[in-house]
Length: 532
Image 1 (tube, one colour):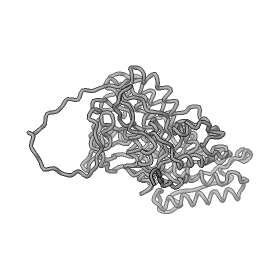
Image 2: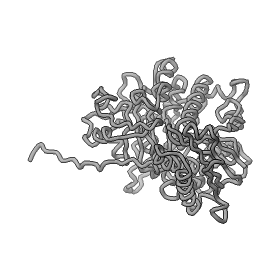
Image 3: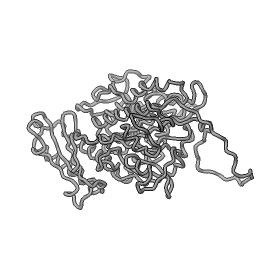
Image 4: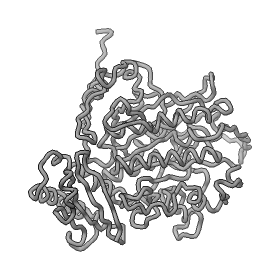
């Protein structure tokens, strides 16, 4: 029967707030031409969220929250769940970023490259928020700086409010994505970069005379390389760009620390322009061998700022990746380089599924990597600049075993929170506590409820201890839970606040971490923390 087309309907994607492997990619990528599959429209209409005041929000189909059918068809500023690279490729024209204004040449968008590396490393579920089309690689002089604020607003959504779904843009969508654990903004470094540069690539003569060899069959299916992309420089930040990038990271970190304490930002450090290496920035000079010290002095690693007594330290919400990588997938990117955030997110996601998010991913071999900019020397004994950088940044470098992830750390300068596994563990514990608290949100506060919540938290922590996330020879050494009149004042009781205090000994830390969970009408929050 000519003209009939059969399409297998995808099963509905059910949210699972207990998962700790789901990543959200927020960035600029084109929508692929063609009608939106009915399964995607139905999934957008069926989404439901419980926001901070207990209100249930549902659906993106045209209605009280979204009336523009064209925006739905374009998937503009909408959270779309994909569970494979093929599903992403069917919806987004990730390979259609223009190289020059009005030109025919195309390359991959950084958001598309990050999602590709995420699934290549074993990621299973991603949420895509398309904030617009990518800009040309070679923009007119001054255009990137002129458009920076508008593009940052599309990503950071400073006006987004939890109870106003119509205000959700960019990271504002995290209010309605309780199952997201990892957040990635792949275009941020490019967005903050200076005007693009071109580089001259000399043609190297062959190292041996031409001879005929026997033909072989290559079944590897490698990515077709656009040789012309090698003469495009990767995005590099000048002084103003680094300040804009630093401030954007601080804004995301503040949003996570206030509203999404169970989530983790994974970000790539930008490449610097050559003149930044010798020009004073905020009264300091970046010496090539002291990148870590420079990052601290200009406020990117925020030395000494993580002593905040009101919750999880700000630096513990962020994991930085460095350097930029040449991979078997990056041949369709400028200078054949991709930022490491997509690959790092995939490694963390796969690790959460296979081994537990609390286990370190340091030592993971990255077979897809064959080069980097800059090329780091790695000793593992804290003697080289790369070793020092690895105390606060997730570093990819070659070793005797090949290319691999040499460190798994958060950017926190508080030692017990520095291990990446510890930071992710605390996010997982808070995620489980939130689920327990939401179930009791509208119940009367009293000894019966306090006892029930205490038992629920104890069972959750017992499961973590049995899986090896917590240290101690016994459960009593691994954790303690209190939820009674000793954790609440009369003012708390009068105002409907319920507080539970837990103390845990993460297996990777040498000190015990104590947190206070507060249950109010706005949900469960991490109210305070201390290390003892």
